[in-house]
Every structure is written in structure tokens, then in C-alpha cells.
Image (cartoon, rainbow, N blue to C red; front, side, top):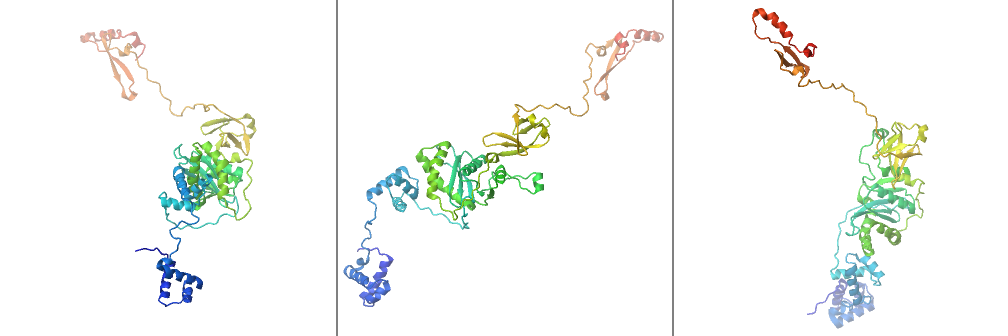
Amino acid sequence: MERLTMSQKERKRLTVMQEIKQKKLTLVEAAAVLGLGYRQVRRVWQSYRQDGDKGLVHRGRGLPGKRCKPAKLRVRILARYAARYPDFGPTLAAEYLATEGMVVDHETLRRWLLRAGKRTVRRRRQRHRQWRERKPCLGAMVQLDGSHHDWFEGRRARCVLMVMVDDATNRVWAQFFEEETTHASYEMLAGWTRRQGLPQSLYVDRDSIYRCEGVGSVAEQLAGQEPQTQFGRAMKQLGVELILANSPQAKGRVERMNGVLQDRLVKALRLAGLSDLKGANEFLAKGYLPAFNRKFQVSAASAADVHQNAPPKLAEILSWEVQRVVQRDWTVASGGKWYQLDRQHEALSLAGKKVIVRTLRDGQIQLERGGAKLRWRELGQRPEHAKVRAAGPEKKADPWKPASAHPWRRQRIGRGTLTRTTTPALGGLRSASATLRPPSVPQGQVKQTETTTKGTLSPELLRGHF
């Protein structure tokens, strides 16, 4: 028994033809029901009378289409895809295959890959987002973000790609850096300014580079000012509005661009055989980004370009600035180094006043006071200050101790006995007293014995050493 596969339209025609066969409908009425002309209904009725249900099925079903690609080309393209572009999406793979002379539509390639089991459909869960209209002019707002990814697929250590996207036109500027730092953000803004100009506003995330986490100083709190990072201070001096996004989706334009580059740029770096940051940055600036912008850049609602002219002191503004107090010896300490101010600034009376210590991106140091540059020289070591004796009671010298042969340490002097005593109240100082104990003599000879005993004292004791 033959099985037929019919579409919904063909099944509807089958029902009408059965009604005509039972003479419940005329051809004119059937034409009105099917929405066809009378002559077309007659042809359909004749096919049904000759071949039955099979006459209503499209005769080209199951046969290759007239625009079908040759089977050899399909096999060749799938083999090339498997060998060189196995992780490419259909759109990107079709672009690279076209450069090799194998032209195929991306939808055709997608169907081939699905049929061959080399691609699966990924469905993403959708979330509601509030759409924001693009800025009308080029340079009105530029979004900046760092994309941390294994850009070189293990050929070197992981790094970050700093990406800037114009909100109005999708124009892109990007550079590789080892880490996402203030220096990297400065370099990105300087590169964009050299090519386009200074944007009106900058849209960034709430990273510590752009938002200060600490509490402001007492002076800032009294003045009602929020503490600023070095990048925030530079943007204020340049007159660029710094906008902090509340979520990654808020700056979705640069976030989506990160995803596109993580797919396309990674494969381009692989095909180019690059594994170092310097070569990759040259590849971006000279070839990849110009072609990328020509392909994906859109036209702004307004033809106006509102970029500002770069200030002459852009390098000095995109720097690190700290305030330091000049010591009385006209030295300034900053970053573990000491700088001696030149004598020619003596008329400024700088001792005790604050100066700005500025570190440029190339490591150069500048000292400034009131907008004027100061001459200085770096000291090899920290200046030594005079030592001041701490206030307090003077320390007493150690007590004198007599030698072992000193008469105070003798046990017997002559016929008497020398007794040593220690007085605790004197802190352990030793005092000695000699007690002469004459031998027992008759009572009548006592006075003579005392006289004799006195004569037995040594000359040292007689001089008062005790």
C-alpha cells in the first residue's frame, strides 16, 4: 500500500475534490472555496480523476531543486569546513569559504551542517530588557569595556582586550593588554582621541578603575565632593562625562561586541598564526578593525560629528597625580623616592606648601605648583635627619663594684673580723662595716686591748674607704 505525504493545502484540495466527485459541489463553487480560478480548478480535477489522491501531490516533491548546489561541491565544502573551520558558525564560515572560491549561502551551509550532524541548535532563554535608542551623533557617547578571554587559545597566557564602541555607529577600536588597568584605559582613550577626537561621554562599568571604593578625605567631605579615581579625575579635567552602568546589560552594545570578537577575532588570530600582543595589536590596527568597521558600522541618525578636539596637554592629563608637602629641606617624597627642588624656585617659598607630583604613562616625573613646572633632581637615598634625644629621666650609671682584692671584700683584717652587709633600700648597693671583736682578755686589760686593736687597722680603712 503506497503512503503519500501531503501538505495542508493538498489535503484541503482533496476534501473539495471528493465533494465534487459526489456532485455536492460544482467546479465554479469549488473555485470560490479554494481561492483558485475556474481553469485551475479544472486542471486539478482532471489530475485527481486520472491519478486519484496522488494527482494532488506536488510532482517536484523529493526531487532536487533547480537551484540545488552540486553534490560534489557540498561534499567539498563540508570537508573543508571540518578541516579548517570546525568551530566556526555558518555565517562566519561562509565568509571565509567565499575567500577560497567556495561560495555558499550561510543558510544553505547551516542546513548542510545540521543534516550532517556537525551543528546543533542552541536555544537561549530570553529575558525582558528595556530598549534604549542609539545616540544620534557620532562621538556623543562611547562605551568602554575590557573582555577577559583566552584570545590566543593557549598559545600564550590569558590577556584582556579593551574595546571601545561608538553608540551611534558601532565603530570599534580595540587593543590587547596584559591586564585591565588604569594605564590600559588611558591608552585606549588616547588611541581613540588620536583617530576620532575626544568623545562627549564615556559609558563604563563600576570597576575600581572608574569608581572609588574608599571614603573621601575630610576636605572632600566638607566640600561635598565624592572621592575620585585617577581616571575619574582625568575625565573631569577633560570635560568628558563619565557614566557608570548599573548592569552589564545597560552597556549591551559593547558587551555584544565582546561576544562577536570572542568568536570572530579568536579564529582570525589563529589563522594568522599570531601569539604575541605586539603583533596582534598591529594586526588589529592595520587590517582587521578597518575591514570589521566597513562591514558592521551603521549610519548615525545625524551626520554631525560631536567629537571634541584633543587638548594640547592630553598626555599630562592622562596621568597619575598626587599632592605632596615640601619639607623644610626643600625635598618632596612620593612613591618611595625623594626629589630635591632647585634653588631657582627660592622666591616661591615652597617649604611647607603643597605641590603636584605627576607620573606620565611613559614613566616621566613632573613636579608642578600653580600650573608652573618645577626643576628638581632625584636623590639617591632618603635624606638623613638629625637625631633628637628622647625626653625623660637620665639613666644612672652602673654602681661601682670593688675588686675582689679590695679591703672591703677581705674577711679578716688583722685580729678583727670585717663583716659585709647589703641594704635593700639602696637598690642592692653594698656597704661594709668593720666590727672588731677582740679576743677574750682579763677585765683589767680591756683598755689596752682596744688600743692594740685600733692599731691593727689597715691604712686603707683609716683613710675612710668604708
